[in-house]
Length: 429
Image (cartoon, rainbow, N blue to C red):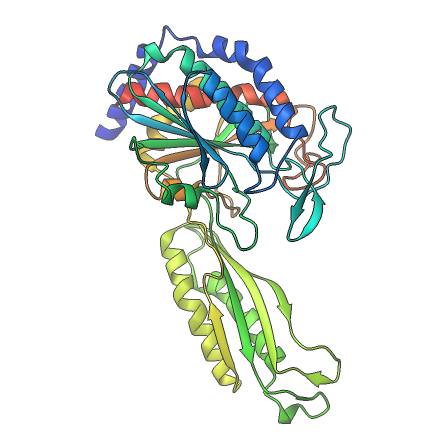
């Protein structure tokens, strides 16, 4: 009860402290610029760790605002600092910059026809996940906050992050590298906010939840070593194919029989299996790769213990040997919304979007490397609607598809949220 009263008092103070700042009016003034920036980014997307022109465009604009700008962070990242000149907290706001190797469909006037290199091949490039809108919204918030810096106390760190979709093979990148390079230091960040546009959520609405909001990602590989034999004489073999089949079925019971699913969902999926080359030869080896998705640390730790136990026991029971690599080549932590921060910001969300448009949503088993920031400082990550109101959720295109589309009108709410998160947090602290 005490914490609830404190949160209400803090929210009331935030509203009072910035009553003289009409964020809605300021967001309306900057909306045309935000749309123009978004169209530019959408027309000229770049792949992960190759956001050279994107970064230059962002950095030039932030420099024009008079901000302290650093480029080349984690390869192509851009970081800018707005200093109010008065002591106070340091609030970080983050947007991701990279596009995807997807060929755009549709007839937008700002449709992408760009090409890039992915895994050694020339591929079409598209902002098929809305990162173009994320950059534009953060630039809009930067413009507003710079114009009213005399109204708050503290500093704002604007983080434009490369390679959220994953660095190219053989490279590192994204939030993990930014954190390692000290993006949350000098000045030390107290809190971080981020958002993601949603093609399946109505324009004008925002979805959020407390705790695990997007899943941890742990890819893995299993190599089963058996004994090759003629398919007509299986008793002369140690069959890695049958062994693999038993492993796949047993692995599914980790989630269905060992985890308390009424608390949090989890997923263990095998996405690829390879072994053998002829119908009449039992191969010597089978390789499988898969992914683990979890929404709390306890479930993640349990799967880390259970998976090798099952893999090794089944291999031994079949006379085979197994090698498990976990995690395989990368991992993402849980995108975890700090409960106290979330509670403190709920009034901000409701005031900004309207209480009827602030929707508490269930977590998803997709992933976001925003989680690397949240491992170090309290963070809040929300979803902003980008679906036109006259399009049903069933007919709205999915993220990472050639048909992906979000409406420009959804960005104004994102600009307002980033601005109000910053102002209200500073007022509370």
